[in-house]
Length: 134
Image (cartoon, rainbow, N blue to C red; front, side, top):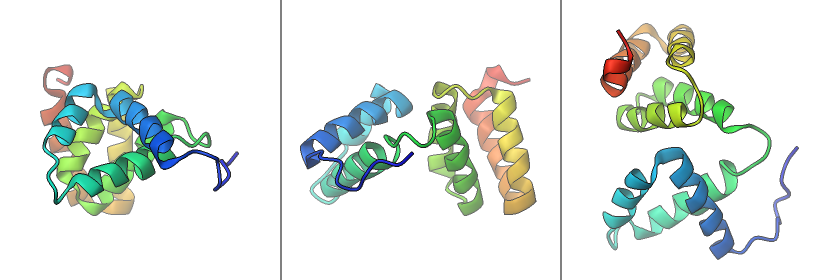
């Protein structure tokens, strides 16, 4: 089930759709901080990720948000994007993943992305989830 390339949305509509999804996944607080911190250097990038990442890709009907979170966590672990990983661990919980499911994603990643990457991901998950894990 794919959305056609020419889905009829204007850039403004795609931005609005993206901003809605971005806020639902990352939280209003995170998005407010990111947009408030935009400068003349980063403003076009903020617009781009809102329209393309959130308005196009995250808005597609082919995967639900839980599945998208699994894909994102795996990719971030594989590429060592620690700051983004922390943010998307929180987003994965917002998208309905349990801590146990996140643990399984990290463990699965150890096989394909390496033990050091998974070790780092477990450390970051422990920091993010704090009291929720024992």
